[in-house]
Length: 370
Ligand SMILES: Nc1ncnc2c1ncn2[C@@H]1O[C@H](COP(=O)(O)OP(=O)(O)O)[C@@H](O)[C@H]1O
Ligand SMILES: [Mg+2]
Image 1: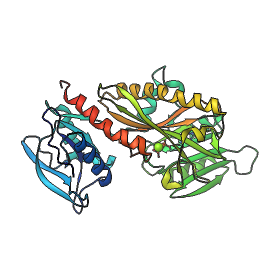
Image 2: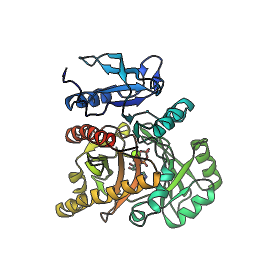
Image 3: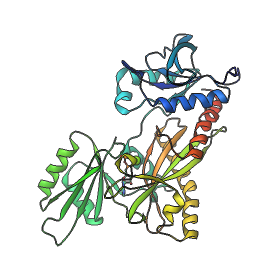
């Protein structure tokens, strides 16, 4: 273990998560270990803290740090942090009263900086990006899904639609609807469950709606124009962009990855058979080498415009986000969603830089007045 003594000019950083009876705390331990190791190498004191242990009125609190082998976690007394890196793992946790209250207290705290306070909602993201003339051309037409009338209206202009939960992730609950005119059962609803995909066929909007309602349950949904994505060996892919703020507090693109859809999957998620790929080789499946390079070059500019607009419209301080972008057959870029709690990128170069950027931005934040 590196035993460099933390530097006084460097902020103390806490990785915020929720507690767990059995595991002590929730979240991706190997990710937390990587963050703490990187922080240590850069001279920062970093620890994991649970919402419950983050007692803002105390001077010392309980923090968790990994043992030298990384196999165990020790609870030790640590000073209150100056910067909080929020890794509360999911929306259900984030919405619990004590968690919501603590996050609000941190946002109001005179000396503590917390960024990325909340998860995004897909409908808000759409509205935010739709409302700026610089970003509106990159968002698919989207409506809230409240009645069968919305589907009928959207199907007049688009032959295929995506139905997605506003608070979804990892492809959960996503459906795709097509209307195949001149067939006996023209409505085709593809429902993604686990790795499998079932197709429901009907001629009646009433029956279609009742099936959708059953799948949806009480979750709020959006319905979105399906983008005809560029393909690689017949499978669609999308680009995943990681954006983070740097030591000057400006947004930058940390890296761009690509995810190729699994066979017959309607999304590109790795747990659903999707694979991690090189963006340029994906684009070269549809475009010439020169055209592919030009498209890839356009990604950072567009993604940065969108990140700035999302931050401005959200009215919260953000320091990082990942973005899922689609590429159509003309090389046009389409926004599918952004995530305020990015999952780790497995590409080694992106991973390394992403860990360093966390500290560059935390350092910058700690020098800002609140
Ligand atoms: N409007 C759309 N047109 C084409 N493909 C889409 C559309 N919306 C989503 N997808 C595909 O489904 C994937 C998952 O959608 P996304 O909005 O990112 O939901 P999740 O939060 O579940 O990841 C995208 O990465 C993309 O491959
Ligand atoms: Mg996604």
